[in-house]
Image 1 (tube, rainbow, N blue to C red):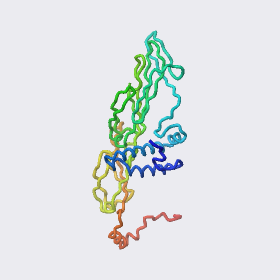
Image 2: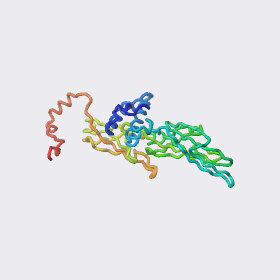
Image 3: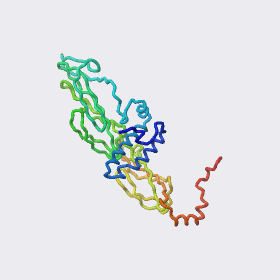
Image 4: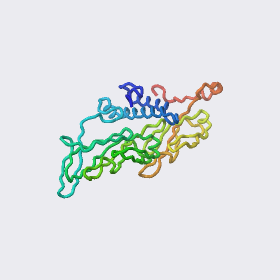
Length: 310
C-alpha cells in the first residue's frame, strides 16, 4: 500500500472530517458492490479502506507520522526480546531464554493477509521442554463478511494451511485465539497460540452501532409523497420495504431483525433506514410548472423558528 495521505488525496494536516469525506467519496466510486468483477476497483477499494483505517485512528495516525509504524500499521523493525517457558520433568536442566548471547533455535515467518509472525530465539539444553511462542496476525475482513460470518484460509507459522472461522457478528479489533497454532515448542514442549486481530473494512453506505445497522436511503419525490414499495439493501440481501405516504427527509424506518447477530443474546439487531428525498437528476419542466402554480407550496416556511435572534 502506498502513502495513505496520497491514496485519499488529502494533505498531512487534513482534519478528521476531511479524511472521512475523502474516504466516502472514493469508496462510492470504486466499491466492489458497484463494480462486480472489476479486480482493479476491488484492489483500490481495499487500499483506500486501509488508508482510512489508519488515518481515522488518532493514535495510529500519530504513530505513522512519527515513523513508529508503516502504512500497513506494522511496527517498524527494532530489537525484540522474547519470553519462553520451561516445562521439564524432575532432574531436567532449565535454561533462560530471551535477548542476548544465545543460539538461534528457530526463525519462522508466516504471512496472513498482511500479518507477521514473531521470531523465537533460544539455546538448547538437554531435557528442556519449552512452550512455543505466541504469534499475532491481523486479518482484513469485509463489512459484510464480518456481519454474516465467513471462513478464510491462511498459512500458519508451521507452514500448514488453516481454515479460520470468522463468526457472524465479529467486532472490529476483536481478537480470535487459535490454540496450538503458534510457534512450535522446543524439546517436545507444546506449541504456542496464534492470535488473530480482525480489522473490519468500512462499507460504502452501511454503518454499525452495537448490533444494529444504519444507512441513508435516497427516495424519489413521488415515492416520498405518494408512498410505495422500494428495494432496500441489507447485510443479508435486498428486501422490499414500504415507504409511507408524505414521508420526508430525516424520517427513519426500521427493519426488525435485519441487523447483526449478537453473540451473547443470539438475537439479531435491527436495520434503521433514514430517508433522504432526492429531486430528479435532470430539470423537469412539468414539475417546475406545477410548483410555480402551487400557491400553498410558496406559502410554506420550513425555516420557521430559525430567524436571527429567535
